[in-house]
Image 1 (cartoon, rainbow, N blue to C red):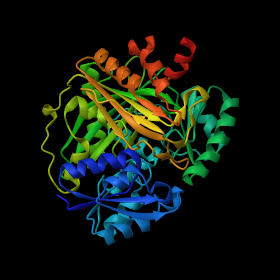
Image 2 (image 1 turned 90 degrees about the vertical axis):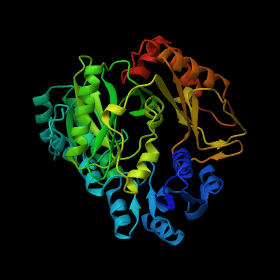
Image 3 (image 1 turned 180 degrees about the horizontal axis):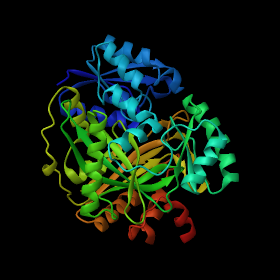
Length: 448
């Protein structure tokens, strides 16, 4: 095992990685921007180094500065968390060049999945179902119209190098396609430096269901069941659960086998997630592969008893994956709510500012992965995720009741949070009945 690991991230995921390192007796190095001098991850780490001003381009995305800190501090490895540099193949390759171990997959695997059109082609060749659409980038609007006519409207226009819901738009006819193509092309160029687009058939009323995989450096690969991640706003998840209310044992086996096939097709190692869209008839289609730990990994940990971040560290250190597929069961039900500094009454507008009171309950079966504290000032520079609340119960109803109890007794003052939305969502008939498609939030508004 490593003696020292640099955590190249911030917020609750940096705290989570530091905790996993502490469990294994590994010393940790934090990095921070001017805005994060007083951050929780900085206080928890054994050492902390300043890396630049608040903008991420000058701090948390400053590859050379982060690598310099890793070398100066004597760290043997870097854990990227999620977001920021987590799926940056050139960063992983730079770590390798400098003799540092990147705690994640090989850069070649990241590159294979990072470009969405290439990923679709690889999955098609591996026998993993993909959403009908083109497997080559579209060069111009006329070609887009031709593809749309072939697969039939509605279609989803997507950025080839995209992610996080950026550069995506639904088109239900040719007029909408013209507008969407221009907008997505501009956003793709601005956010990813690559204006290329592709088209997929838009699946009506889908569920967003993903499969967690683990693979060691020798190719031993398993899956750890599914997570239901359909409750989203602006294509970003806000509530996740495991297992899915929609997935039966047969579908679970098929999706799990497809996810393992997908990972093996690119020589994947470490923790990763294969995301699928599932239609009302239980047909599933490859969406993308996240080549990192996911925000929602705790619901898998709570229902399988497997510490995913610990296994990330062990695999990166060269240990074989001792878990076998038959070792992975499903124990009870877990639900995660992402607690954001956002005002749900104002279309989830960010709500930065000083947290004057922060009180989270301690309840049996309840876990809080937290990146803030009372007196902490939430910066406008970064993603407004404050914490993740995870509730486990022997049944789904039990998990819901525990989560509602936790949300109802949490006290946050000084800023707005998404807690009122979560309470409303979990109390709704739609959620109680497990009818959580990607249109859940729109349907919830109609139910009010």
